[in-house]
Structure formats: structure tokens, C-alpha cells
Length: 368
Image (cartoon, rainbow, N blue to C red):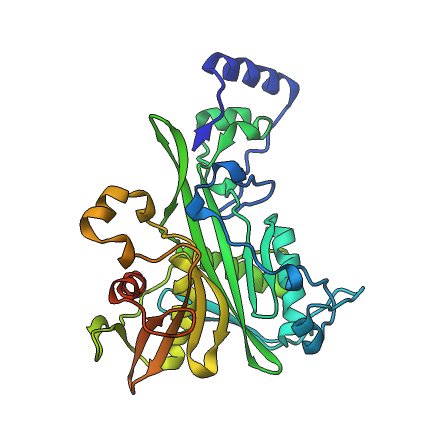
């Protein structure tokens, strides 16, 4: 948490003025999530590896309302009426280890505008909106609930809320899949960046994602889709109990690395999609029938790109993922296990070092 440049004497004087003017103060700062009136990182402060690529605006911000599949595909959908999900639409929260998702008994065309409305109610701006591929990404947002309620803040209440900063920002990536013509799966991935102070100033670096925040967002989204207020009505979300899954690196014919994960391709597909977005990948296309994700690299959440010295010592630039490059991630069914491989944008084999870089990141997520 950071306190914006105010002296202690200023804080004391201000607190006396506040207390004399008000009989009581509302000290409620929310619970686990509170993005209302959050601040985003100034674009000039964002390191290059945190900058999202420019996306085709053709499919951005389709208005709410009943939208046809043809209109979604063309990016020309228009409607004056807000879509209302059927009152009897079934919504279930599914879980596989530390990966959760919502199963909604409604077509994707009805769900999409409700997601746009959900983020507006939550106070989080949308950065990327592409119904054509079923991908939505938010801007970086500050979670006010992470600011500790210390003695000074209790004294000042909300009158000087702007003095405090959580020193971190969250971003969420949503991915939709059509389970059937009348059913939609909603997956959420979380990314996090934190502010670090050094002798030359401050900078933002990626930090590990928090699956418990993904669970909280899904829980609030479920409340919202059922007509409730996601900011007030969300019930507590129990912590994930991890499901053990075997995962190991291997080498295929020709020396190409692969990741072998226990479980059928369907289950591994679900978990891989969420985990790709946790480790800085942005999904550009998804072809479940072929078991292929097409994704671009946005930067590593552990900030390894900043550690140029160690990168030079332990691996060459030719063996590292390139920011902005596109890759194909293939998931092949091998009975009671699945094999994950990585190719370039056309699916051709990558240099082993580059493919291994991404596969090792996925392996670490499967082992969390």
C-alpha cells in the first residue's frame, strides 16, 4: 500500500477537521474485491512487456441486446434492447482443481452483453471485446479492498480515499465456448502486476496470478446473471482444494519438447486455456475440435524479461518467447493422458528452446 505524499502533521490536522465535521464515518472498505472508482496504471508507467497488443476493432463493443450469430461473425450487430437471460436459465459453478468456470444454460449471444454490463457494474473498464473469438479482457484495475484498514485510515475514513493506493493492479481475461446451441461455458483468468520501488523510482512488474480471485469473480458473475447485485450479494467462495494431476516434460521424435498431462484432452483443454492466460498469453483463436489454441505472448508474470543478466547467463534470446509473437498450442489425446506441444503461428515446429520455455510455464501452473 502506498500513501500519496502527505506529511504526518497534514494527516493529523486533516483528521481533526474531518472528525469535527462529521458525527460518524463510514469505514467500510469492501471485502475481497472492490474495484469501484479504481485507478488504472498510467500508460506511460507501464513497462513495454505489460502493454497489450492492438486488436482489430471490428468486433469491439457490440451493443447489448439479442444478437444473432451472423451479426456476431460480421461485427455489425445492433440492438436497442438489453438482453435478459431466461429466468429459468440454469447456471452452475464447475471446478477442476484450481480452475473454475461457469456453465450457463443460455446461448452465447445472450451471455455476451451481460458480461459487458457486469464489468460496468463492477467498475472495471473493458480493454478487449471480441465476440468473434469469444475473448474479453479488462483494463488493469486497482482493488481497493487490498488497502489495509490501519489506524490512520480508520481515523480519516473515506474523506481522503485518494491518498491511498494498493500498489497493485488486476486484469481479467474471459473466454467463452459454446457447449451447445443453448449452453455457454465462461472461463476467467487473472493477471496481477505490483509496483516496486527502487533507487531510480517505481516500476510495475508481473506477480503470480491468484486463482482465488478468479473464483470470486465467477461467483459474483453468477449472482449477477441470476439478477442479483455482484457488489453486495456475493457469498464467500471456499478455497480451492487442489486435484493432483500428473505432469511431466518429455521429448518427442526429432527432439521436440512436449508436456504430458494426466487426463483426457477435454479436461486438459479447459485447464490449459485458463493457464495460458495466467502466464501472459493472450488467446487469439480457439479451435476445440482440433485441440488448438492460437495465442500471442504478452510477457511473463514473474518479470523474467527484466532480468536480462540471468537471461544471458542461462538461456540465449533465441530460446525465449518473443513478446507479440503468435504461437499454436496443440493438445492431443493419448488415452488417459494428453500431450501438449507448441508450434509457430502456422503450426510448424519451433526451436526446442522456445517451445520448452512456454511448456515449462504451463507445467508450473499445472503443479500449483
